[in-house]
Length: 69
Image (cartoon, rainbow, N blue to C red):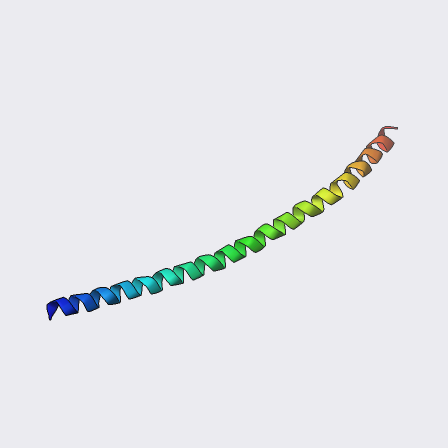
């Protein structure tokens, strides 16, 4: 009888661990999705800066040349 109780206790412990790990995985997936959105925002900012930078450099060169001349 004691062996049966031990097996049931072990089963319940393992079942609880599975539920705990599943919750942790769910939390980590949510964090990963949030970080992916954040990364995408930064990548969009980089793309915008790369597309604007040549124009800004050109304008600064003109402004500098104008101020010197």
